[in-house]
Length: 118
Length: 426
Image (cartoon, rainbow over all chains, first blue to last red; front, side, top):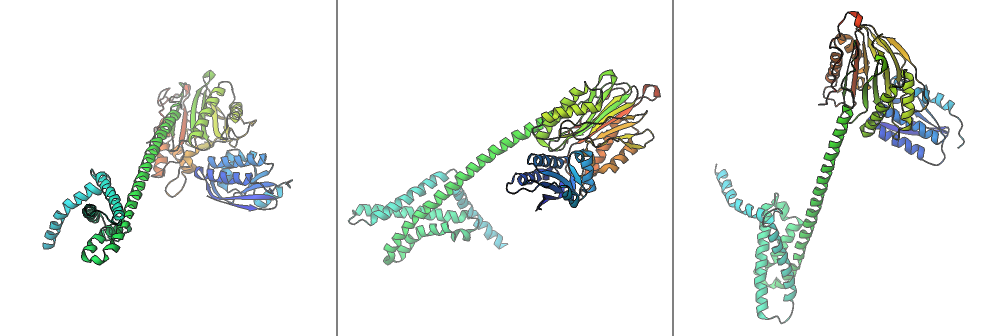
């Protein structure tokens, strides 16, 4: 799995691509933690753009939960967007779509990102 | 023909020399150390004698001793040089290697001096180069020491690895052992289950709980992640759920309470998907709540398949204070309930294709008429065939419940109680 980051004025986009399974989860978790621990001028939110994400296992799902919690602690908004049907199903089945903001696409997610105080 | 004879002749002369080289040069050879010490002593002797010879007014006997000594030194060094050539795999490479040239330079002055006395003094100075022979000894000893240290460390690592593997195997055996091996004796219903653990310790579990009033609780659960943390969390989740099931008449409140308890005992921030149902063998009523687990199937006696609605409750351990929903489904005589984890539907084959729900449904439809045990067996077999040689990446866990009410006239296939042995992984 590959991960790209994109800094927008409102939010940092995290763009994972490929399969987020048990083997990829630890690496993805480290990258997201590094992003959230990084100081400097923080944007108001973190959005994980899942347009390129083909598969998420339960271990992968855990990284989303950890990222949502860490964002909350850092005072950042957290959202995911552009889930493929297979990934959307995992989010719905696990109940994650009840506790994590899910948007149809990036524009919708950005439109809902609150203006940060940072 | 001739060539081979000649070859054999050379070989027969060569063999004893090779043997000698083995004895004297091979580090593990019986005389290697003695030969090594002799060479070292001779190097020191020859270096000292080079210095002594330059002293003026040396007594004649000293000069004689030094001369004899030099002959002995050159004889031994020449022997060593020849043996090294014989022992070398690539002889030319050795001759022109640095230490090959050093060895040659260490003896060449002696032979050359015999040819032309005029260069005697200049050639004698070359003997100082014998100090370079020392360098090889130092280098070889260092390499040998490091090799020895590495081997020691490797041994220690392998020992630690073996110990760890043994402990993990024990942990996995314990993990399987705490799963129930028998379905509670209840009139008219039979349950069968199987957990086939993945090579990395996973966190799937199933459970059968004897509840008051003759009811029976069935659990199917899957902890996020793998390894020791998942196995620990599995044990904690199972114990809490089993304990709380005794005090909660409704599945939803049992899950909600279990979730709250798990959220306080969750340092690794894991979570677990749980399907929990309470079956009443007297009426066939199945009450259930789903905490983020794959929705189970009911195969009706006529072969049709229903997916149990009400999925989408939050997995347990993710957030405290969550509510779950109670649902009810009525089982009829000959119906089967099939619970499974995603290790079944997400078993992959060699072209990275998942087993999927369609194949699972097809198996249940086609083979659901037999006993609970037979259906579990059938599905496991089908997944194994599908995966082929692809290693199993996740636990595969299945439970099947069949119900034959006392007044239906149908006889339970395998009596009231059926032993269910969790399969040992091959």
